[in-house]
Length: 242
Ligand code: BV8
Image (tube, rainbow, N blue to C red; front, side):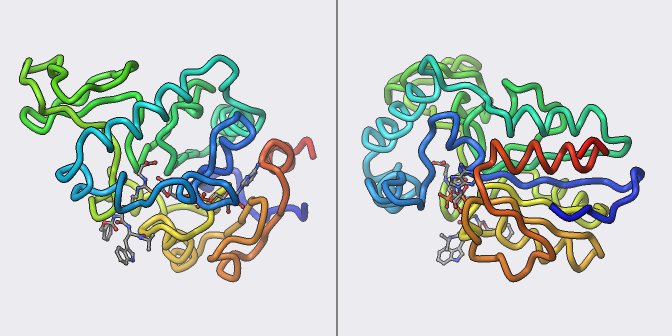
């Protein structure tokens, strides 16, 4: 990988997608055999689907929650490398993940935004409380905060809903010196537009992915390969040990 032209006082924003968790054993969405080849987005990942058939939507997330909590699903070398970058880079490193898994959290990432929510949390549509949720979520489950029944939903952002913490993300993009996109196909907005935001703010841009994403032409640099190889190599290079 060619050296990245960045000063140690410049901030870094990193966007991650399903590809970074693939080698931890979690399915991506749009790769061959991915989640969206098995179920339709319109049936399981929209507010309309939940209103029409809550049991189906809750069942879809129950299965994914069980999969995430299976033994052997652990952070991989790519997640760990980003933690090392955050600890050792002199300026701020912000990881913005589209993933609803908790593998960045388990690896120890501190400065982290889950822009599409978190699978291991429930949100109450009555009182708004967000609570940890590690088991299946039956329709009649009670909210741990207000005890209302039938009001919980997975704390995830469905298509047509506003992603979380967008003001903070756009402010970080406007102030970063380097934007890195890891393991995402670049098909879901607004995340797919972050590279343009970063470029217009003068940041260098790098894509680390298995294959060129839809937004590949927008990046100045790219390295293609499995995240467990490309991400540790990128971090080592940046920290001067490459
Ligand atoms: C919004 C829920 C307004 C949680 C997810 C036309 C019609 C209707 C809507 C739209 C439209 N055009 C745009 C929209 C908006 C829509 C959208 O983008 N639709 C697309 C599909 C056209 N977006 C929204 O509705 C969003 N909200 O826009 O609000 C707004 C307006 C202005 C400003 C702000 C907001 C809400 C989007 C949230 C959707 N929620 N899921 C869940 O169940 O998980 S999206 C779903 O896709 C996941 O959350 C996932 O995170 C996200 C992105 O997918 P990727 O992570 O990129 O995964 P993918 O499988 O696609 O790619 C994997 C990549 O990894 C591949 O490139 C592969 O090569 C690579 N890879 C594989 N293995 C490896 C690897 N890389 C490295 N190493 C490996 N080993």
